[in-house]
Amino acid sequence: MVASGKQKFDGLGADYDRYRPRYPDALFDVLAARLSPIEEPHVVDAGAGTGVALEGLIPRLPAGARIDAVDISGDMVARGREKFPTVTWHVGPAEPFLESITGIDLVVAAQAYQWMDRPRYLSAAADCLTPRGLVAIMQNNRDFTANPFLDAYESLLEELSPGYSRSYRSFDIAAELGERFEAVTDHRVTWEWKVRREDFAAMTQTSTQVQRALAADADEFHRRLSALLDAHQSDGDVVLTYTSELFIASDPRDMKEPAQPTGRSFIS
Image (cartoon, rainbow, N blue to C red; front, side, top):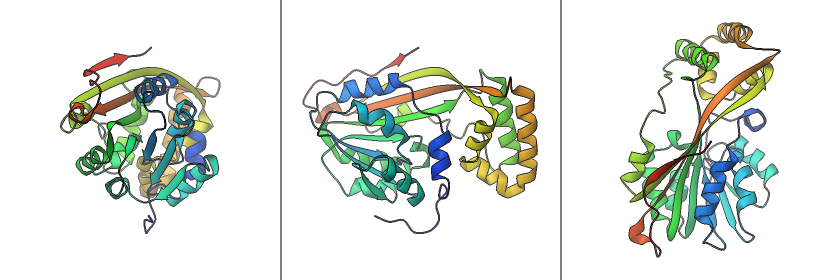
C-alpha cells in the first residue's frame, strides 16, 4: 500500500525517532496484561511512525506474535524498518489498511488518533478484530496546566502557528470509543522529563504545528523559542510534564469471555 505525495512527517523520521518522548512502561504493562490470554496475537500498529510504541510493546509480546505497522509517511516507515526488520511495514493511511484485513487481536494507535478519520478508523478497527480483540489508543499530552514553561510554549504556538489551538486534542476519546464498543477503560500516568534545551528545540522541529510556524516566519519562531528557553532553563535543562493516556476498548457482544468493566485507573 503506497501513499503518493509528500506527507507531513516526511524528512523528519530520524529526528522524530531520536527526540520524541516515549510512553510509560506502566501503560504497556496494562496493555500486555489485557492481551495475555492470546498466545500468538496478531497486532497492528496504526499510524506507527518510526515504531516508538513498538519499543515498549514488542518486549511484552509472546514469541510467535505477528506485527504489522502502517504509516502514511515513507520516511517514517523506512526508519521503522531499520529498527524492527521482523515487523511487516506498510506505507499508506491506516483506515483502508484496516478495512482490508481480518483476524487482528490488537489495533493500537499511539500519538496518531487525532490525525485519523476517526469514525471510519474506529469502524474499520472494530470490524477487523477477533472475538477477543482489543483497540488501544495511546498518547502523551503536554501538561501545560502544571508546567509554566509548557504553558508559555503553548501560547507561543497559538500565536505563531496558523490555526493552532492547545485544545486541538480536546475531544472525548472514551466517549468516541463507547459509541462502537461496550467496554472502555482509561489508564493515565503523569510524569516529568528533564531534557537539554537543545534537545527540546530539536524535538519541536518534528511537530506539525511547529512546521507551520516555521513556514510562516522561521526567524521569529526561532528567536521567540530561544528567549523562552532562556527564561525557563536551569543549567541548560528544561523540565517537561506529561500526562500519558491509554484507552482500551473491547466489545463484549463478540467476546468469548466476560468483558472487563468500564473504568479508569491512575498509575503513579
